[in-house]
Image 1 (tube, rainbow, N blue to C red):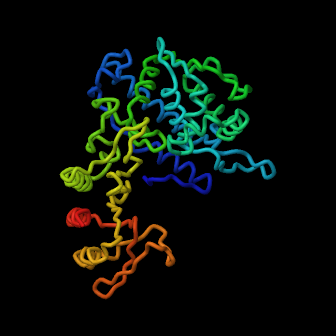
Image 2: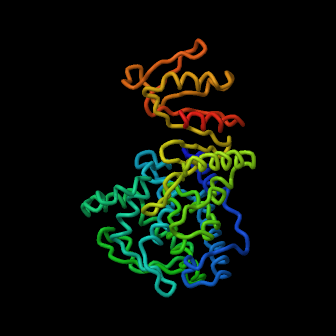
Image 3: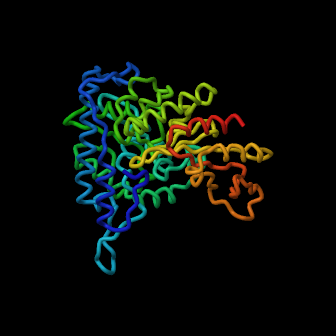
Length: 375
């Protein structure tokens, strides 16, 4: 599964939806749930309802694969009459809507009472994969701009889509402007505990939903940890997906960095620093990017100012067969003022402030990382 789902035609769109819906977390019949997550359910009820919500979402996306026009992923071209891809909508919108409903609501008697002002502001952040730092700016947006945004993002269609799969949404009027909606009351009569799960699953500060593998893939392991806990790497869903060899490499790297007191991730304002999908940041010292098909590739951020001699030594210590991977600057330009050329074993390399090093997935890579961080 690719980290980013892209598509250029209807067939590719259907494949992307299927890919997004695949690789879902296997959920055992019984798993650990801390009391703070239960939302009034027993542990057994919680486990059953969590699996039921997972199955419901899979069913939603299975139907969407055949009918992407249902939420505005496709629309009929006015002139040609052909179905065209709508770039104003994205595949993850259903899960983002469900997450935002849980996040901006109060749970009262198996009913989610959604504050629509908070919903409008939050979804505008999550939809665009933007930082939560934009929240204050979004609060200043006028109602006309909000209405246009929610119209182009087909939010009304998504609410209708939810009702087709068993949700009851009181207070939603399809023809009413989104900015005029004050509160929605959402229930799921055929299986009320699903409502409790939506609230529970929106509370842990694992990662913002736009990048949320642990949310999008229904990672039950998070409920064994506190709402504001730093989830151990071995319990992150993006790590659990990896082959055992790559898991071991990533966990060993994590352990080595911890010895230097370099740790990934801190919970802050509802999202998890350092765990964007397939990405782990260590205090801006190391960034690890992960590809679901090809394993992981560790990246380093190094400041080579006044360290050119040490940089040369490090390059020369790396086996020649791996040097073609390093270093590669992100968008490096010949006229970059912080770009410095050095020569190692007769070959030129560009070193600059903020240099990303692309290190190969080999046994010795961790040694190179630790050596570089000690420079």
